[in-house]
Length: 148
Image (cartoon, rainbow, N blue to C red):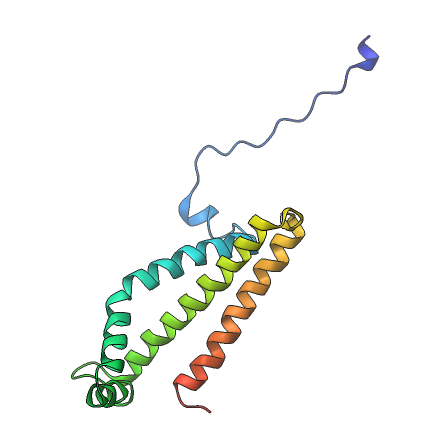
């Protein structure tokens, strides 16, 4: 009877306390985890920039004079705020929207298609989300900064 018994397993490592400075920098987050965290951050960025979005929309469609002021804000700035800073805020908003949208489509696809809930699909779709959002942000940022 004793020969049928399985040998005892070695004891598992125990993690009781996590050292913030020692353990977290060495932790490797998978691409799906990075996309998930960035999805939350992009939603927060869009929420916090809502007054800027409303100002841009209101100024751009009110009249021809306000649209000229809107364009001038991006070129020369608004009072003490330089135009480059406004462009950087708009670029952050562009990234937040693109990443949130593409990651949302990824989540919707995973909800609809049961075959998409695999480790391989999670990794490839997360990498595709990161590459697409960054590539589109670079393209639109180049247009925003007048490179083409």
